[in-house]
Length: 406
Length: 228
Image (cartoon, rainbow over all chains, first blue to last red; front, side, top):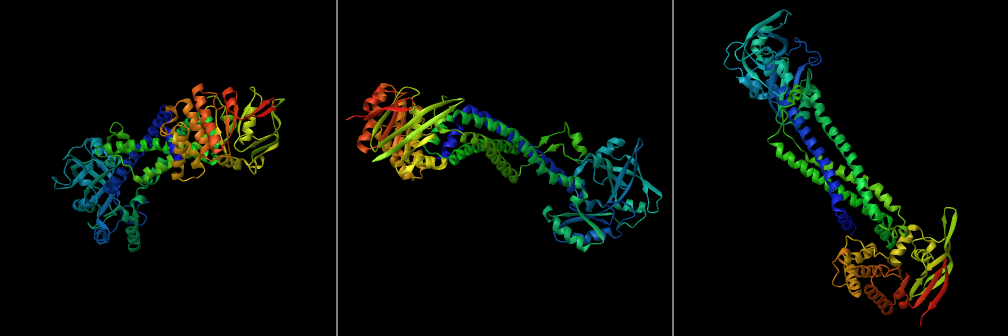
């Protein structure tokens, strides 16, 4: 019956309860939707990092990642890539020959990273071919085609079939280069990536550099599922110990940090919201206790002990918090579901986000685990908020409380 | 058989620098089945005396024995439990739980005692029928008149099967018809079920119904009269 009394007491002063319930619901909605929004952003960024940039695992010569010396290439990289592709859980692999260089258009020049790839094999590992906005993916240009990013094309004022000169230091350290024509212009969510990475055929690049076409600096490994990363990583580390075998989290720590820091950020944000709400809840419950001084005095007089009075106030506060919390979570889930497919266009501010690799359309994602966490946090908030009003109630002296004129 | 024995009961309040002697050395015995009114002018110590009898207030000196229990020896938590099982309360302002129905209000005290749902149901309906509210068991206090609310309060006071019922000015907020009805019910319960009632009152109609009238003045009993 204490449960029943507490529940009914919540609805006793409908306006007052409605005000605090609205405040709780709005606060929780803000927290939940904010989390879903940033979770969606982070997931998109991670997916983009894996599918466009890093893949799940990469192999390099030891020390290459720390100091990308172009002489640290793997001689038989294409063969090695084929061998690794035969491993369990590996979906596809590709090798890349990478050099740092300059690209020059008739108007200006820019420092770039030149990725020598096998276009067909590359398209089984990354989704670069799906990101072509103009022209085609290594088609339409027979000799020395190059695929460049939209951001770079804008900077160098290049169009499809525009001629560019790419220069870099060859194997012997002499300036080498050739003219290339733009076959395609790609655009990913990452503006910086688009501005600094260009793709040419590996055979074109290796011949200019002066090494065999099978050479490569990087072997990218795409797995059939992200969850297999630790197992495959361990397997490749033991089998190919002469190379640096690293997963995407090690290669792109700034993206990995998103994954690990998102939950913490969400909890901190939610705690701040709940902290603000806790004072409102305490105030509401204090008013409820003061209004019911006489009734509480009566309850204590007729034999309701302190633990039961405490429990009653506690349950009432938790009910109040949970109702508001659940309404807020439902609101957050509904808005998340409503925007999950269409996405939220943040193109107004996407220039800044794009520089960090974020898409201009965000698809919010809400995880069940986080919903459960929010419910638990709201429950704990209710319990904490109840303590002071409940203690206030316990301090009442029945003989005095019962005679108070309300 | 004595239900209550009071010896040299004293209550002194320290009101800033002045000591207020609310109750001064009262000796009293109340027997089972008595229908007692405690009367006296405002400030004579009726409520303080009743509060001490009900274990709601601690005496400065003296002792109270209820049944075999020395009330002043009980710890606060034991005192609450003692009240729950031994004393029924009827308050001037009814003090029902507004969110519960009449039946639930009567049941509530039995639930605190740990009685089964079946027993609670049966006794609550029986008591409400006894006080003439058998047809209003599902009404909330806001849907009942003052007199009806006070009758629910009487049913609630009896629900725990107490040794006695303390009623602090139970008719003060009632009109004459409701007062008559309430007094008739309490008198009937006293007569037929031998329930001990102790009232504090200003109301002459209550005094007329009482079979024992104790008059207080300045915290002392100045008259203790049993009617034939």
